[in-house]
Image (cartoon, rainbow, N blue to C red; front, side):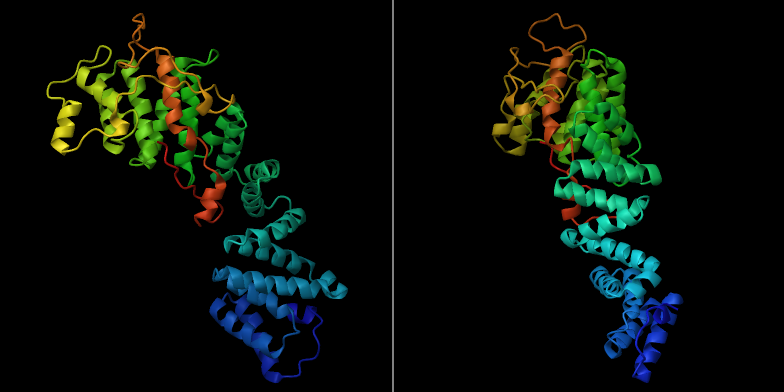
Length: 400
């Protein structure tokens, strides 16, 4: 028994000894409520019998009382490590307690207290996927991207079903400009809690590939449609959803799939009526685009404003030019140059008319709509307090 192995002093109080035995028995029987009560009573009577803290930590852990669990485990580790004989006899219990304290601190939101314990636990068992995952998340919050990647690689090797680790690896590679590696991990991520963000990044990369000299533009467009379609199934009514509708509508317009283009453009306007591109999209619907004529009864922008009883906002004013974002990995979109041609309508496949932008230019302009949401910092997920069993949910960042 652990209490006997702890080499505790003779028990001076019969009631304390009885409480200690009941504490251990309740823990072994998984009677966690009784264990907490009896272990607390035993500690009050026998504060130097440190083996009791181990059982109390297990009971609090099962009840998801993270702060109390961490404190109990740490008391056990400190006391047992202070005695060489106890440390040798209780090596396995010390390892379990360090691990339990680390995870409890992290789940309680105490990254500063949990990170050293996570490092200790990871050194003790380098293949522990759960410890590695939370270590990776904590290191991301600390800004240690290299350490975080190493930790997430352990998770992907030991527990590939934990799709959140693939998401974070995909995000790290995406932000480093390694899009091939990013795609590999993001393809494994969409089944998890961050699948909307995974599809968003994968769709954005596919959109960039439509103008790549080495990629198959049509195949890249199909990938973009697949990922943005999956994204919209998960996140249908957010600011990012409006941007996704614009992307998909633009591809459909370029392919002269008129009904699909109108449907996505209308959804874009419904979700983001004051977006800076709203007036242009409204004009596409009013005047037609490419070979797609405006259907009878389509409201003009003026009619829509008159019916709503409002005047045009600044976001609804016509936009004369598009901003060309820089290429992937080459700086930010904010320092981009201006395109020469004014925007009139979405392009036809034949772009001989110089008043029309070619499809690559229009696609490049659309990329900047979502540039602030191409990566979701894990710190946003943790600050929102949305940790799952082994993962984290990322909160959505407005993409307008």
